[in-house]
Amino acid sequence: MTPLLQVENIAKFYGARIGCADVSFDLYPGEVMGIVGESGSGKSTLLNCLAGHLVPDRGAVRFDTRTGGLRNTVTMSEPERRMLGRTDWAFVHQHARDGLRMNVSAGGNVGERLMAVNARHYAEIRTQAIDWLGRVEIMADRIDDRPTAFSGGMQQRLQIARNLVTGPRLVFMDEPTGGLDVSVQARLLDLLRGLVREMRLSAIIVTHDLAVVRLLADRLMVMKDGHVVETGLTDQVLDDPQHAYTQLLVSSVLQV
Amino acid sequence: MIVVENVSKSFVLHNQGAATIPVMKGASLRVAAGECLALTGASGAGKSTLMRMIYGNYLTSSGSIMVGDVDVARAAPREIITLRRHTLGYVSQFLRVVPRVSTLDVVAEPLLATGTSRADAVQTARDLLTRLNIPERLWTLSPTTFSGGEQQRVNIARGFAYPYPALLLDEPTASLDPVNRATVLAMVNEAKARGAAIIGIFHDHAAREAICDRQLDMTRYTPGLAA
Image (cartoon, rainbow over all chains, first blue to last red; front, side, top):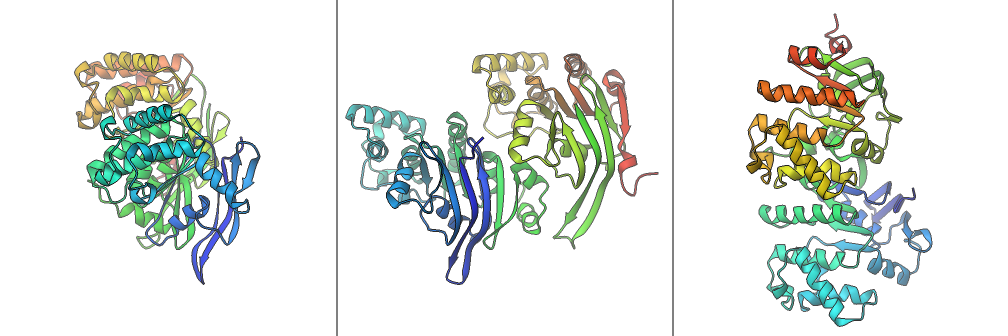
């Protein structure tokens, strides 16, 4: 089987400081990988390099494109990379406002992504938008409201609808539940878990919340100071951590 | 079906003075299809640890663990996920589920994950829950609030929903009343009859006598405990 994403020796420096270095892994279709680590460990830098938002200083990110097989997204042209960003990838930001257009209606936010991949029929776009709002538990009567009128949890669900409506093959998520209170987090996680399984999504989720990865991720990568210190099956890394830092991380979680 | 050869395991606790705790050395066993092997030995002998190693939940320091044609000690995460989905079932001592998911869905999940239709999966789940005496009014609730015995029976229903060719059972009868214990023992015997290779931990003598073909005392592989 061809991996969907093949990451080879990615490194990104901020001046002399290491953002992330020597990161390599393969992600296969249908796999969900979690990346955990404390703030400053390089996990968001890595995610942004993978999603084409940052240009890595070294290494290759090969994506299995629909027409050309594995292609290095680091060296492909900007328009090609942008096209992948619209058709094959999705990026869920921690702050919904970074991923939404705040002065466009909820329906418009979802519809815009469809139009970007050449949907033109207004009624169909609106029907699909309503369908997706329903799937993320936003009432159809809120379709014409702007996200500014939504709560934080609703904004995050809207961002997810906007990202998934075009049926992406790979979803990048940066702290998707960060900053939400726990009951809202729980609902969002249930929603994500359902969508991941139903749509057989491949995803890379960056988070510092071990409960989130236990729930969503098949595999886990632990980062510290820009380097990967441990990888493995999620339950194995959490139940039998090998590296000193992972052991500290796991033992730091309070049992409720 | 399951062949464990010369495996050892130690835990290194980096944050507690880098203490190294060897817990297993040179363990070997082999279980054929249709056979049930009981692991015995006192607490701390490494029975559950070996089970977790076979399931890929704990890493194996050295040696090999073949389940079918996969060496769990060396397999990539996605190979272990496939193995767990189609070949190797595990009934742990304690039920660990996602909160807010209904009992019926918890039990049906292994079938849904292997492509059984929703209707068939739910029907099998209903049959199992009925057989294990979980009252129907509880089926739509999450098992997280159930009593210990009820949780254990939900766990067993989930473990037996899909006909795995290999099964690991960690004290499946520990907190059950005699009626339910008899049901579980009958289910284990049925699994053996259809050809499942089973490794089990049973503290209950009678249960062990009723279903196990052989016993293996894990104490002989425990460093510091071996006589």
